[in-house]
Image 1 (cartoon, rainbow, N blue to C red):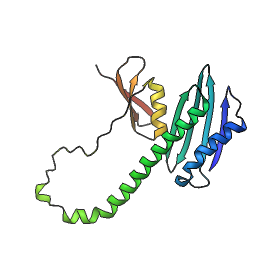
Image 2: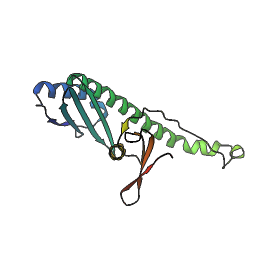
Image 3: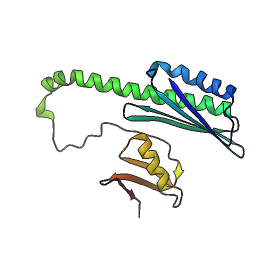
Image 4: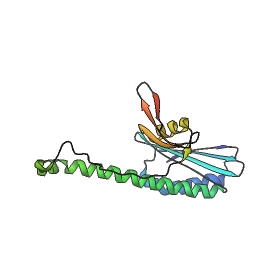
Length: 176
């Protein structure tokens, strides 16, 4: 993996560089040697922040962690990225298995029991909602490669949804 490490209000020492590469090298099995790992370290008052962005086949694996100690932030960001990678890999494996068994399931399916108008929820997802501004939510949506993003609006303290529209514009859904 190739590392692009930069710092804002912090000097990137050899110790920090070694800690980052040491932690991220644990994730080597998920990537090709050409994979770029973009790391940005920053310090604002007491906050030690690390942002890691890894572009992967049209998707972006990204995590941002903040603590009082940069080495703790590095540990936390590695754990989060590893969880994301495991989830991503599981999703890919599940898709491949579903594609392989599609023909069999299609032939064996009993169509008499199937109601075309029946509403079926096939996936449920739970996640914590962080307060942020709509512009930040749009950026996060783009980084994740999604068409919409649910967030807690920091201005109104209500749950909102931003979504991508035609012509590279965005919309926002707000409750009344």
